[in-house]
Image 1: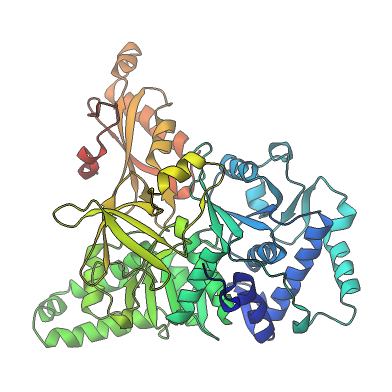
Image 2: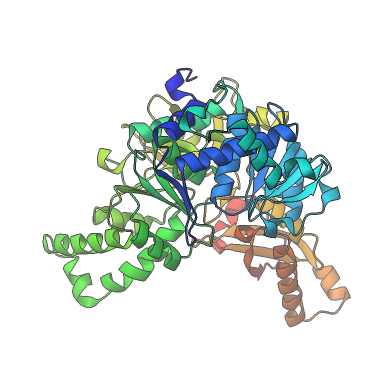
Length: 558
C-alpha cells in the first residue's frame, strides 16, 4: 500500500492546483469553456460548500451521470477531496439501470445532465437529498430547503468565506489515507445484475504514479478525452493522471465519430492518445486500406527495402492524422484486430496495447512503445504495482490470468458472494481471461474464461442479461447472444415452434416477430448492448448436465 505523501491521491491534486494555478486545466471541446486550475479549484470549493449545506458526511455517496464536461470533472474531484465516495454512472445507461445504481449505492446527492434526468422520477430515488444539473448547476429536485443550495446562495457563502478572493494558498484538503474508498464503479448497468467495484484511493493513485513514471503525462501535456469519464480507462489517464501532472484535457461530450476526432486531433495536437480499437480500426480502414490495396503499393510492400519507404510514408500520414505531436498511442478496453495490429507494428507506428479491468482501476499491464512492446501482447504487469500469473496452465502455458497489487479492488459493494468468487484463497484476483505469460514477462490474452463481452469503448456486456430479456419475448424458446469481429452483437434464437404452429405463423411472419422482438429488447438496452442481427436457429442448443448452453460450440456461427 502506497503510504508516502507523494503518492497520496488527494495530495496529488492539492499540489497540482497550487503549482498550475493560472494554466489551463479542462476545456469543453466545441465550446468557449476553458477552466484554469484555479477556476476548477474554485468550483470544487463551491461544491464543498454545497455538500456541507446538504449535510453530506464523510463516506457518503455522490452519483454523477452525464456526458464528458468540466462540471463532471469538478463533481468527481470535489467528492473525493471532501471525503465522500463518487459513484460514476455511464451516460449510456437506461433510466431503470441508473435508478438501480443510485439506490443500490445509497447515493445522497445526484449530479446529472438534463437529458439523462428525463427518464427518472423523484419518487424512484427516495434517498437522494438533492439532484443538481450538470448543465448549469441548477437544482432539479430537492428534499431540502431550495434557498440554501441554489447557485446564488452558494456563491454568497463562497464570497463570505473568502472576502479577499480565493487563492492557491487557500487550498487545504483534509488528507485521506489511500486505504479509504474513493469510488464505486458499476461494471454493468442492468438492474439486478450490477456489480459495484469498491476502489480504494490507492488504486486510483497507482495509475497516476505509473503514468508519471513512464511519462504518459507531464506538465503541459495535452489530451483529447473522448472515452467516457465514467469508464475507468478514460477516467484514470485522460482525466486524473493528466490533471495531477499539470496537463490540459480537452473533453469531448459528443459521440466520438472518426470525423469529429480527426478534427479535434488536428486542432489540439495531443501529446498522448488513449483509444479503443474500434476508433483506430475505422481510421485504418478509411485511410490506409485503400492505399495498400492499389496494385503499385501492394507490389512494393512485398519488396525488401522498397517496402520501408512506403511504410515510412504511410506511418507519417497516419501520425499527422492524429495531430503529429503525440509520443505514443495506447490501445485498451477491447481486443485490437490482429490484422490491423500487425500492419501498424510493421510500419513502426508508435502504439502499444495495454490490458486492464474496472476491478483494477483499470491498468494491469502495459509496456511503452519505446521500451520494446511485443506484437499481440498487452505488455508486462506494471512494475512495482501489479503482479500476474497463470493458474493451472495447459501444455501451451494457457490458463486463467490472475493478478494482485496496488490497483486491485477490495470487492463488490453489498455483494460478498461475488467478492469471494472473484478472489483465490491466497488473495489473487481472477480476471476471467485465458492467457499466457512468455519468458520475458509479456502477457498475451487468448480469450474469455467466462462469457462477458466488451463493447466498442470497452464497456462490459453480459450476454445472459440480454438473453433473459429476449427469452421473455413471444415465440422465443431460448437464445444466445454472440459477438462478431466488428463488435456487433448477434442473437441466435431458437423459436418456440409449438407456439408458432399453434398460431399458424408462416416463416415470414415469424421473422417479423423476431425483428419486433429485437427492437423491443433494444429499447431496454444501452447503445453499446444493442442487438444488430437476429438469426433463427432450428433446434435447441446443446447443453451441459447442468443445463447450461455450451457456448463454445456456437462462437463461429456469426
